[in-house]
Amino acid sequence: MNRKQCKCDENLKKDFENCSQSIEWLKIHYDIKKLDNMRNDYQQLCKIEIADQQQWITKQRKQIERDLMRTFPNEPFFQQKEGKEALQRLLYTIAIYDMGVGYVQGMNFLAGALLFHSEECVAFWNYVTLYERLQLRDIYLENLPGLSKHIQIVQLLCMSQQRKLYDLFLKNNVQFENFCIPWFLSMLAMVIPIRSYNLVMKPMILNRWLFIYKLILSYLQNCELNCEGPELLMELTSQTHKWNQCIPLANNLNLDKKFIDLMLESFDQDKQTFLIK
Image (cartoon, rainbow, N blue to C red; front, side, top):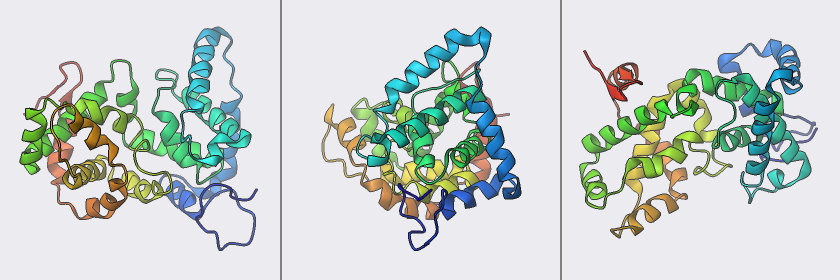
């Protein structure tokens, strides 16, 4: 199968399903020699139909179907039959992988960004890598307990490192939830251009939330906000072209890893606050 989506490795002459970057991501967490077994496991998950869970399965399939048209609407691959069907299968398999969570809006952008570079199987296992290493289950669970944790950390970091911007948000009643929720649910795949998302995959896998916080802080720092009131939030979220510029900046931003790890470990999901001893 020829690559029809990303332009990675376009100098290669042979047919190939996965660009070299997607395989590099896979190797971080898995033994590439077992790829054939991983393909078989993926195919088995794709075919699962659980007799006593038909209502749940129908609900998942309907929500996935609704979100297909909303996923990268300007990207030809996802508007074609082949791309839509591949993404649909991938999202259903993601839902089956953790039935306690199922499919949640936002997953479609992350899964699509991975599928853009690879066959379904590799996209799935790269998704699982992020899901496990970044503990994304907490974000997608009912009541979204993980979202509160990460939003509070971004708010705290902004207050300590970008006080002028923090005060501007406070003055204009801009809540961090208003822009952070879609960012976290999609792991920024809703806002980072799909042809640039490959630049953040490896640092996300290796450095986890530390890199994500750095990237968000870099974006906030580089936004040009020239208005106040209700327009401020719109201006903040509309400057998506700035994300490309912020990726290299994030790598050079200094954050205390020990402090970040302490905050992540000390969050009490029941009380929705940090309990630091």
